[in-house]
Length: 306
Image 1 (cartoon, rainbow, N blue to C red):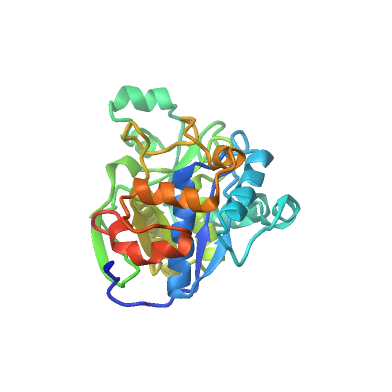
Image 2 (spheres, rainbow, N blue to C red):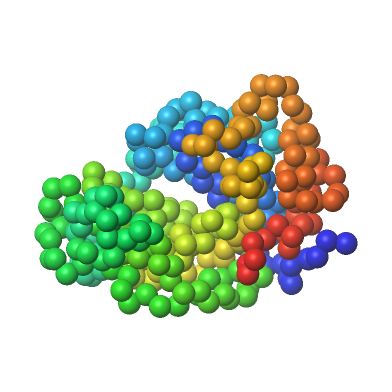
């Protein structure tokens, strides 16, 4: 019998938060399916939030692919857009720029950010691992400097406490990879970490389901929320799941051209077969006909330490 989580707390809302920068692959579909299973297990509503701030990479054909994939795999959602028109008219992140700008101003006024003019090549020269060394932290560059991003000063970050769905707390050192992470890009637009925190707080999301590769983002977002005094986000529970890997053992990627759900759909593959592919990749012994079947395998699907 599959192991059960210690108890079943109630959550208000979780979210599906894809970025429309490519056609969705099997790993994306698994994360969506698992989110739906956890939401129904805990009685949470599901919000579809499309993260489209990166205008250069995002496209409407990829937004449509999100709707097509969810419909094809019969993954439900309770709130958010149902089609391209609703997405453009009401749900694009462009409609919430004022929220992000307010949060950025709060960080600036509190002295939590500084301007940085370093390029990626500058960072690469300073750090073989690509970890930002804090070069501009003491340079006192004016925040309105042209082509400067804003970074959050994390020099005082120590241990981050992450809440699990069962109520357990996990203490984690702040990841070096997120040192002084960017909160506003050089083009003036908010960066992913800040927009994600702002949106989760705005929509009252209290359960976040994401891959184990996003653990550093979880720590960064919790630190950001603490700097802003956003206690509600600090009470959010996080479930980090294992990743589906390709034949080479690496995680699936849209940019790497891994097989997309769209390709499988166009080949005439039935949704049940797609779920069987997921089960095989995750070493789930029982047949898996749809997303509800994932609810009984939460322990096996959770990332180590979750």
